[in-house]
Amino acid sequence: MNSADRPKLEAPGRASEILLHSCCAPCEGEVLETLLESSIRPTVFFYNPNIHPKREYELRKSEDKRFCDRVGVEHVDADYDVRNWFERVKGLEWEPERGARCTVCFDMRFERTALYAHENGFSVFSSSLGISRWKNMEQINGCGERAAARYESLVYWTYN
Image (cartoon, rainbow, N blue to C red; front, top):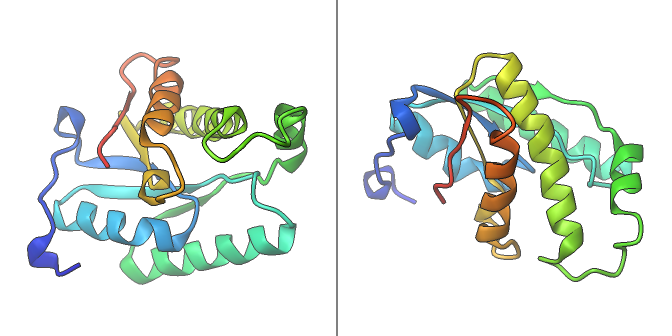
């Protein structure tokens, strides 16, 4: 998208910085550029234990970090934690895309993102997951809002 066509954003509470959960560089690219052009400083939080095999996870993480470095955005590499992910989704292996397994997965990732936001002084967090046409924005927003509700004065930004 041409930068002249991008909307100028205003984060909740007029926050000048946010924590952005990212699944991968392709999904976060437009989001990061729009945030930066809106004078909102993102810190990217990469926590995705659902990605496997580990080689694919490492590839996505590496590309995500490389993109963040290119645009001058801090990249936080969180734990892979794949065992915990498999435990949480056990019994949901045959759920369809946008089903209960996705809710459990989003909850897990956003719980960790919200904890990091809380522990590191962020008042707002969001995710690039909603960019994907394969995801359900209402499901993502519900999981984000649930995670934020655990901490006083933390907001999940539902903007898509």
